[in-house]
Amino acid sequence: MLRENRLLTSAKKLQLDEIKGGNLRVKASSNSRPFPAPEKFWQVQDQSNWEWSRWCPFAISFLPYLAVHCFIFNAGDLFVSDHAMPYVATIYSLFACSRLFTPWLVFVSIVQGTFIFAVSQIFRKRLIVWVSSIPLLYVVMHNTLDFYHDPFLVLAFVSYTLLSYISFNLEAVDGNLRPEDDTVWKKYSRMLFYTFYLPYVISLVVLYPDFERQIRERTTRQRRWLRVIFFCARILVYWVAVELMLHLFYFEAMLNDPEFAYQMPKNEFLTASMAFGKRLLNHSLFRSDTVSLKHGLFSELSIR
Image (cartoon, rainbow, N blue to C red; front, side, top):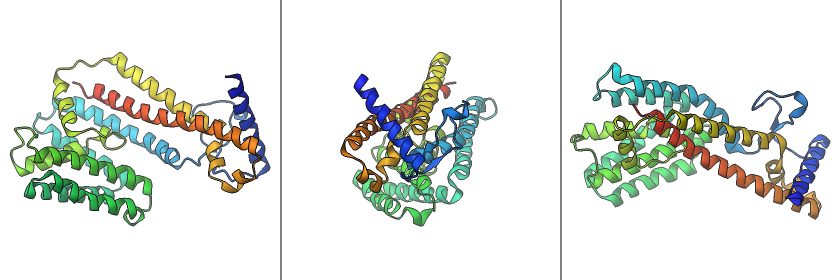
């Protein structure tokens, strides 16, 4: 442990010396602060991690829409019938997605889903569902900028909703839908309700049978508020931990600057590599655990 701390301290000192000297081309920002603290405590934030630097502000902008979704899903039964509630939730989710991801990407996603749904209803073969989705996924992944100038929104929204369309239509082909969904319109509207269910629209891949099971359990499960608070606290801890790492360490900036890495002495490069590996592992664990915590949190909040 002592040796590891020395390695981290050495790497940190190396980073700060190089940044102050202007040798390291680091994409950084001095405006981001995870929480209030004295100015001298903060260094500039490493924004070389494209995924986190885009995901973090997006997640914050997502929170108000999730709060409204929770209110609609829990209090909507007082104003509309159980039959109308999925339609109300779907309309709101489409509106929220249009604001978060742009109306154009919502339209692209619906076109994808409609195509897969139509093909599965005509041929009713699992293989056809997969075959019909592969060209769509290939086009989105390899021509991302043709759909929208922000690749993060395309990859985070269009690809995730495509997975939901596949899951629903595989179950439809196998005849595993609800008995009451006995018309084409009911099946199609249920697919949209499932795909655009706001807490699961990105980051989480919830299979359609699991989704329906959770919806059924809303009326029988009892909400555990202590568990909700615990989930929120853990997400906050992980979020702050990642932000602190990006403010206090610059391993990813070093990795993304090959010229700087090639100029480093071997002993310093080894020190930085070990520290970066530890940071990357922790970052991956934080992201995966935060996603699972989000799943559990909204499972609790969706209970009546």
